[in-house]
Image 1 (cartoon, one colour):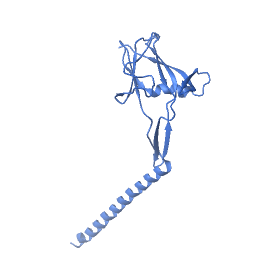
Image 2: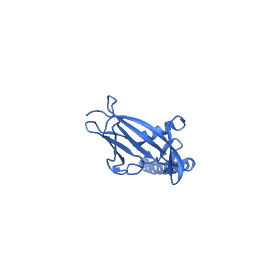
Image 3: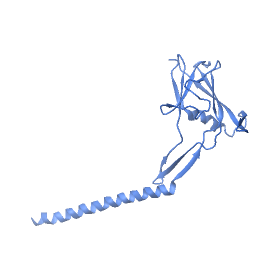
Image 4: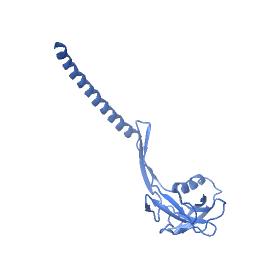
Length: 190
């Protein structure tokens, strides 16, 4: 009996010590989380690159696909007038005889922003800009979906390239130069 009476206080002391260790560990994790947020937090502003984007819609043989429609979604909602200024209603962007659809994104200053930080100084946690999905449909072809970022990447890649054609447009009485960019999109037959 004496042994079990001795072990009961030891058991309680051991459980108490374990609780202190757990609480202290939790408190340390909270402090480190807060400290890593305070020391690594960033806030940023951004915009999509302005330009006139010429999408060349082609079939597998490299021939133009006439009558292909492009619709742009943010989530499941159609994204009229943003990020592309000339997308005004569903199925209004249609490829011409040469298989071309022209999209425009006019300069408008800062368009969106975000934040981020590095949890424990090593795990990046980021909030990005808005995401849009483009969908091309054409009779006899599989639906083709892709991120609008693929279109904007053509501008990022060409940004410092002086040989990329540019045109001057008027915005609020000011002349602004925008790039004219091309992107080929290949559709597969059904």
